[in-house]
Image 1 (cartoon, rainbow, N blue to C red):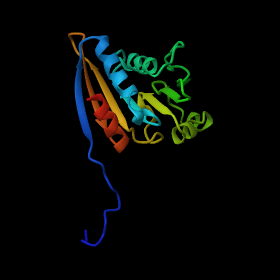
Image 2: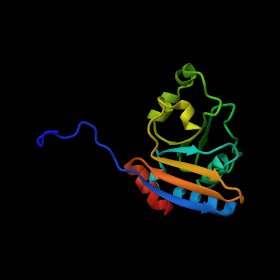
Image 3: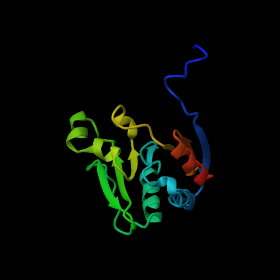
Length: 168
């Protein structure tokens, strides 16, 4: 590349943090740390892990920490469950496990949700690859043989870096 030309695409080096959850209290602690960060507003968090790893459990703890007092259902069949936190924060909890029809993306207005304000949480984001934006923060939860969880948080944006700082 010529010295007088800037790169066409600017990349952000990703940062990561690893945690070990021994009990559900550890999951709750991470949720509370993230909920206390202003960076969470309008963030997109992608949740990765096998069935039963704890993705929905983490979302429930995060929504409780944000003040959601109503029943928090898994959006496995509905694909998305909307919530509103005290103070008006819109929250959209997606579960793309059964997502297979790309027309559903447009018909359901998901493009508008991701382009608009509010916190977006997505389980099984790989099933919507190419349609969702890059996550600010990716959280991978791995169930270990001893009932603990290894949790890797990876920031992909400046907002994600601020969330990572809150989690540390």
